[in-house]
Image 1 (tube, rainbow, N blue to C red):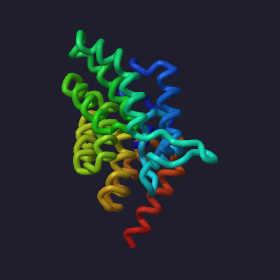
Image 2 (cartoon, one colour):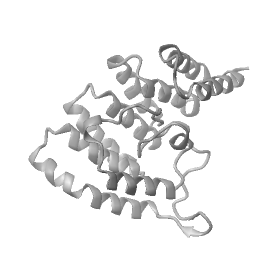
Image 3 (cartoon, one colour):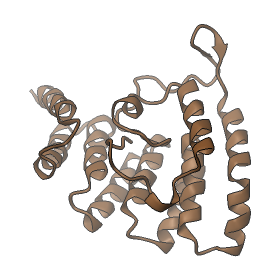
Image 4 (cartoon, rainbow, N blue to C red):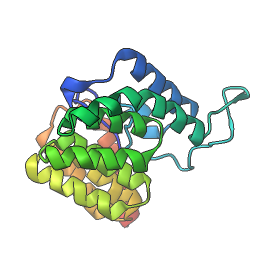
Length: 215
């Protein structure tokens, strides 16, 4: 799902080193990540509006250059997380480490693996709203829209006005559950509690689009 500009990641104190972010971002770009990544998000796992078509895992990119397959992306992610996993063995209650691992897998489109690590982190730190919102994104990408909505609703119990949770709640209701009325309700609340939202025009456009489908 999308992360609006200026918002923090799953754990602001555990951002990935620049080199890792570059690798993950490059992988996402090669596979043509969801439209929301470019419109709204800055994190490797940003979602929001998923593109009409699934990522082309065996296609080409930019003039014929071969794209990485999901298996190749997984292998690269496995290398990226190896040191973190080793460290987590001695620090099993370190939620920040688990979030880092989850974020790397998420950026490599390994959403089931990412979801499992976000879930483990939340068992330790249940009130980590950004991590719960990212877990919802991963669940949605694996086809579990109901599970994603459940996680977002839980996140909003902890932080009723959370920007990303409200935005993604609307997107999943609209795209995943074909519930434009529910989506509009979420987005209207988003604009109400964030009157100076940087991407206000885009949210208003989505509201207009959703309202049009109700007619």
